[in-house]
Amino acid sequence: MADARVTAMIVASALFMQNLDSAAVVTALPSMARDMGEEPTRLGVAITSYLVALTVFIPVSGYIADRFGAKRVFLVAIALFGAASMACGLSNSLIELVIARVVQGMAGAMMVPVGRLLLLSGIRKDEMLTAMTWLTMPAMIGPISGPPLGGVLTDLFGWRSVFWINLPVAVIGLVMVAWKIEPLPRTDPGPPDVKGLALVGGALAALMAGIETVGRGIFPTGWPEGLIALGAVLGVWAVRHCRAAPKPALDLGLLKIPSFRYSTMAGSLFRSGAGGIPFLVPMLLQVGFGWSATEAGFVAFATAIGAFLMKPLTRPILRRFGFRTVILGNGVLAALGVASGAMFTADWPIPAMFLVLALGGLFRSMQFTALNTLAFADTSRAQLSAATSFYGTAQQLAPALGVVLATASLELARHVNGDAVLRPADFTAAFLVAALVVAASIPFALGLPRDVGSEVSGRKLPPGPPPSGSAATAEAANIAARPEALASEIVEASPKRP
Image 1 (cartoon, rainbow, N blue to C red):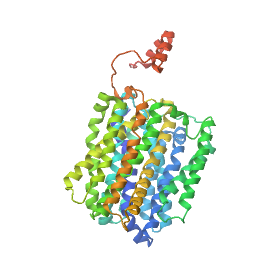
Image 2: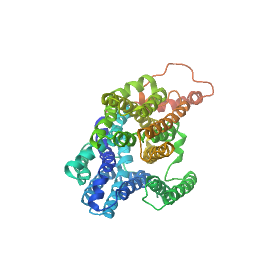
Image 3: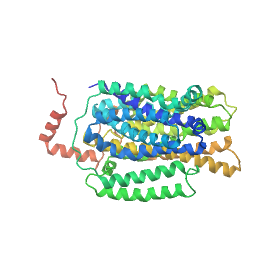
Image 4: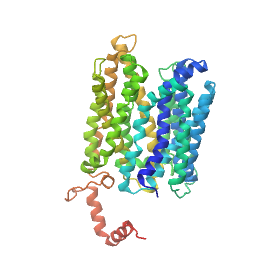
């Protein structure tokens, strides 16, 4: 088996390709609209169609990986993403572009959770934190580096190059996956939960279409709101079905695991607040301060630098303080980092702004890594397939909600301030709202066990009797009552020597 870092970097290359593509396309939209003879607002469907396809097909990814083999599915997904990227670059009309983007989204839905499944299934618990640290870097770097790179590529080579940049990454990824990653044994997952997949997919499609188009004038008045309402109804129906189905499309039983429940639910709240920052910072610098796209993009890149600086510090910090303490303390710092954007004015020195953005990226990187690692810290190998699908779906929804929250805050602030156009003061409110959402996720960590994720972080708790009536006490009594079972477990857990 390849080294955990090597495997993580190979899987991360595919995730980086997807995240970079999603962010870079936004910068190229005006140029694409001119070439195709379309209004720029109509080109928003190129983003919406991708996100809807990506979100809808994530829940089925776990079943497909089990049925056909995770490595094979991952290879096909990378190849399909590269081919769809080429088709996007060759598109000459909006309908051609939308079809290619839908195929891209389908491929991306397979890459993200299946890639994570390949990584987590082949490593030990004590390697998980290192692997997830390397894997979560694309989530921070892609959205930040995408806009400046997309602007540079569009200005120098045209908008088509934004898609073609994926081709060499896809080729390298295919070679490295085939060479370095071991295949996982195929399993028989049984018949798929067709009704559950239809309900979950319909709910996600309606919600994402409504969220991504509300206030943009893409659909007729009232349609986005109607889609959101339809998505909510289908979502309730899907939850009721998944609770009753023997093998549901989304395994809601995973939420009984405290670490997974927190990372999925409270973590989604954190991502919704933090997810608006890659949108707000470049917008403030360009619209509020009148900077060029290139200037704004390179200053916003400070967030990615902060994420890089945090990478070597994540493991020792989590080993020293543990997941619960880090999530609580670093969550406060991350919320302050988001709120710091409210202080920016056109008079701020660029180095000072760069430093503040880098620190904010550093704290958010730590929180992302902690959340993404903790989500799988207590899941068994048998649950990994379902867990990666479930978690991937939640991860995809949260940033979209963050952008909607940011745009709604800007429009409300503009209306309250009586501004005809966006001004820096309107952004102050948007940053503060995002910070409040991030801060709202912090108290949920108080419900986590003190030793949560200790097997992954390597933190040694001080010796002492477990609290009376705790789960640990019950487990200790259970073990004492069955010494033969304990001996068997020790033998099974012992490292096997050749």
